[in-house]
Image (cartoon, rainbow, N blue to C red; front, top):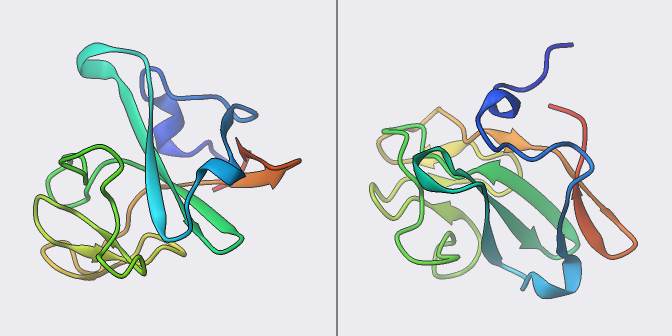
Length: 126
């Protein structure tokens, strides 16, 4: 199976990279993580909903811009969905599928993660 497209981007983290302690991720919130510097900086974010953590490349499928306009601002006001602050598109936390907005039917690029010993770790996978 081919590696996900995001893995070919400059500064993309490698599988096995520790991203954050689970205890530092509030339920119903997202946290941005960056790797590298400058225009080629790799931007991603993790979202926690209860005991489930998902991760995505921080790039809206509508115009390839970051979803957040302020640090760690990724969620709707009820903490139930991901929202692009530029275009107000709304995405499911489970798989990044856009449910409403300019990119309806498209999805965020999901990154596989696991929680091991209380730490969110980037893993192999789709």
